Each structure stands twice: as C-alpha cells, then as structure tokens.
Image (cartoon, one colour):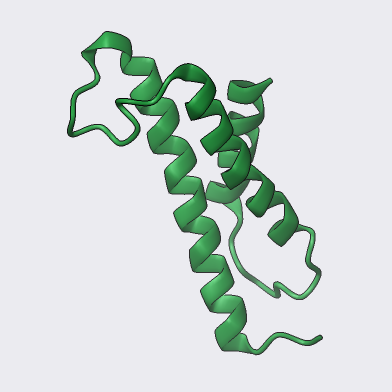
Length: 89
C-alpha cells in the first residue's frame, strides 16, 4: 500500500504527538511527589507510566520502520524513542 502525502503528514504528526506523550510522562515521573493534577499522568503508578510509554514508543518504532517517509524530520521522534527505551528498560 502506498501512502499519500497527506497520510504521511498525518502519520508524522501522530508520531510527534506520541513523542510528546513520552516526554510529558517521563517529565511528570521525574517530578515525583511534586507532580500535581496539572501534570499529565500525575496519578499513574510507575508501572502504569512505563506501560503508557511502551505503547507510545511501540507506535513510533512501527511507524519509523516504514520506508516512504521522504524528507520528514525525525530528530524529536528519535530522541523520544531513545528516552523511552531508557525509561522502560
């Protein structure tokens, strides 16, 4: 199946959103007991945070393996993958 330019753009945006989720969950975890209701995932246990990050990074890795990306920038996505692997490892 060949993706259209619009589908590729939408998938890239979804990857950036997934990277953001990973970054926010890890940042909330780093706050520890200083996390508040304003911090995404503040009420999750460490295991729940890890599971959330694992789901997001799985999606990023799946998408990244596709070969039709063209010139999309993966800098933020690659960093989120690296950070997620460290967090869940």
